[in-house]
Image (cartoon, rainbow, N blue to C red):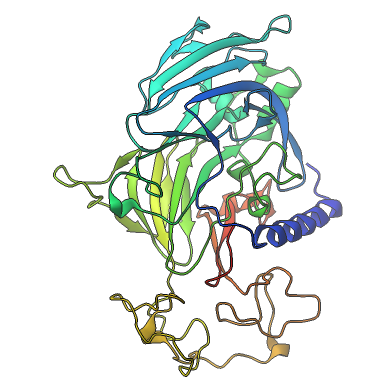
Length: 435
């Protein structure tokens, strides 16, 4: 692998572009990126992706129609009750297929494989085809993946997300307790580049799964720092989905976590616990309840291969014992009429903390070592003095929390720290638009 100074410069440039673009104020968008159904035309084809260490890796992936291969495949978004049709064309040199865990699907055409019907390999320039249909009976987060030689084809990138929406907007499920303000996808996977090199060079018979050793870890097909690049970034044409959650204080963020690889990944959220409300498209509830009364509050959720998890994460800054906005308590109109939970309806400030002083004395400027996302102040929406040349990475004085795998090895890109399965969650002040 290339680990030269050039790649270090690539890191710096990518981080700068990613963060600067990602937090530009644009129209708010509460939902994840994907393509709507209920009919989809997918094509299995080859392509390349960029990894966080500056390498380019040969991949297989599902494309939207005649578009480019992408990793992961297009996020398929349908409504509960839809009759879903997926037409698969195969432009690869071996048969491929799709299975839809959690759905009762039927297949027409193609040839019978071990698990389902497969689209035959490309022959004489003519792609093999097969059609799958199923009724999206239950809302929730699901995945789709190749059912043909999955030990190879999932490794090569033939995996994607399926979202089934209930009848009410901005709910994960039909129960009102699953309402959310913003949602983000976290499809977690890993890669052994040696396998990809063998396949690219036509040595597929030499692939030995007993020696598989991943050295790259992904969120939505990207490693840190690319996880913070905006969606559909020109520098990542085959990796269109970002994974940089952003919210205002008090907003509910729906995390859709998918185990898209072959390994377990402990996914950890800084800033607050998340509440797991569902697994594999089913609410965690007792038999007589309609709400997730068996939900689990945790700071790390282990993502299991093939499993999906829905969780709600919220940050309020409440009960810190100091004013997160740096107020002195004399500001007019703040916390004069708090809601029943003690929050100001406009600033979302926890009113018992309003005006409370910061509990320690801040060090002198010359004694500070400034981090990349440090605004110069501990307060939300308030900037402070920074060294010359700093300050461009956090123009709105947001608060950054790292979300990442809790397996230390998975925070590297081919042994280069820091990278891998990590991103940043950003809390922005009320009134700052969020993309």
